[in-house]
Image (cartoon, rainbow, N blue to C red; front, side):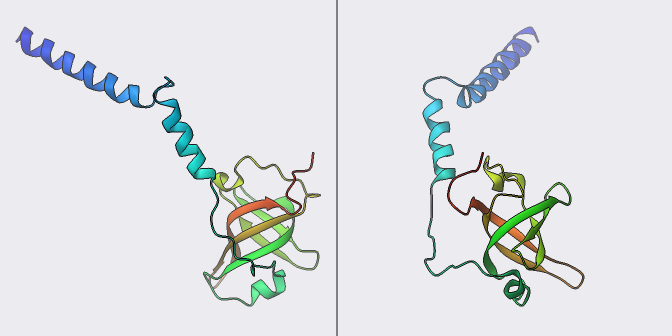
Length: 140
């Protein structure tokens, strides 16, 4: 019984340490983690014809339509919902935490959002897929 218990504990220890080594910060694992972070930040296709639309134009679109808009976030409505204006109209944006990618925005910062119309019987909002500064530089 003691041998079985010893072998069981040794096997658990070896398996557990092998799993932990994969995500440690050693020199072998760091390049893998950095490569995965680089892949997440790498670019993709940008449609040259994707010009920002006004909120009035966006409100006429059907559910699941992709849109690009430029304007300002005026206030936070909840954890991931914000009031957005293009100067004439307002719409609610749903922006999940991972979409921000470290970007900090104030009501004075003009931004460009790319997202998808989320329309149902009682609500209309834009589920944002990306946020960027309109001038490409973050204001201080």
